[in-house]
Amino acid sequence: MAEESSRSKDFREQGFLHLKGFVSKQMCEKMKARMKELVDVWDPVAEKPAPFTTDSKTQVEAQGKSDYFLDSADRIHFFIEKEAADEDGKLKDMKKKFSALNKVGHGLHVKDPTFREYSHSDKVLELVHELGWKDPVLPQSMYIFKQPVTGGEVTSHQDSSFLYTTPRPTCLGLWLALDAATTENGCLWARPGSHRESVRRVFVRNPEHFETGNSDATQLIFETLAGKDPAWEWEGKMPEGCDEFGKGLKDKGFIPVECEAGDLVVIHGQVDHLSLANTSNKPRETFQLHLVEGPSEGITWSPRNWLQYPAGKPFPSLLPRGKRKAEEMEASLQEA
Ligand SMILES: O=C(O)CCC(=O)C(=O)O
Image (cartoon, rainbow, N blue to C red; front, side, top):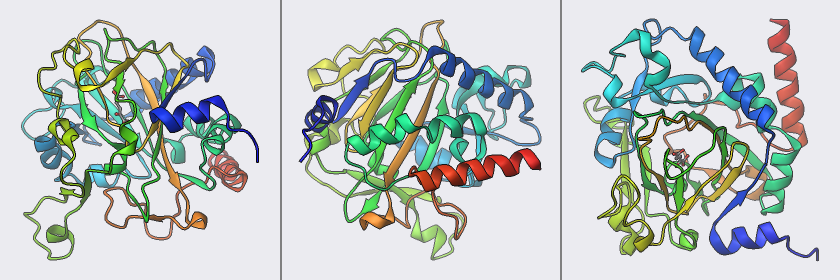
């Protein structure tokens, strides 16, 4: 049997990995420039954005009432900071559309050639194979802005709560820094070893809305899976006593993961992680992939997950056949 690589061993022990210089600075600039083009052509009047937040109470309110959120699964949709939205969720200041953005998602890896190129690169597949995923498929990608001064916090969570599979959770996050990310501008904080804890809750489609037909009920709800875990104290929140500089986080076992542009943070789906608001004047843009193990490994995507592609459309596979498919799609886009 082949000897385990040191990065695979670190990942198995800590639940996350910091890989320096995973992509070149030029690739980071290419992705940033491409995002700028996408934002330039986005018309927030014709295509009204939705506010995005990760605070547990407002998350159900904000995302749970929005078709724009559910429909973003395999498309390119624009989400703004809640402070940038008026009472109807519309962008308050049309001239500030870029700086209002919280994120763009969740199908950049499906619809856009630049983001597809990175998502289907050999180095992504090699890494994922090395960490033990055999038939990786890619349900979700997103571009997070964490804007200078206004970029909000992301509360502590496990990614498997949002992208759940059975009979075991298999979510893996690939968080790529496109700018330097430090404690000053809202880098990630992760809690090493927390991947050994159970998935505490799932963010799912609400049967009352979708099955009983009560259109007043929110579309999405959180359901509890694991009850007594002490980490519930900060699930969907910032840990008690944590200030805007991260004071208190280390006492709860979180450590900051400071990155250069081009570094990758690999995040096990059960690892607790969060990021603070960006109170600095420096940008902190990232491109993130979330993959899961595919059906040939006996894994089922939960039909209750918030994210569902249109009926019959599979998640892109990272295996070479998936790459071929991506190239075919690229060619047909160019012909169109
Ligand atoms: O980019 C961030 O600040 C946090 C993103 C995150 O936690 C995630 O993608 O799961």
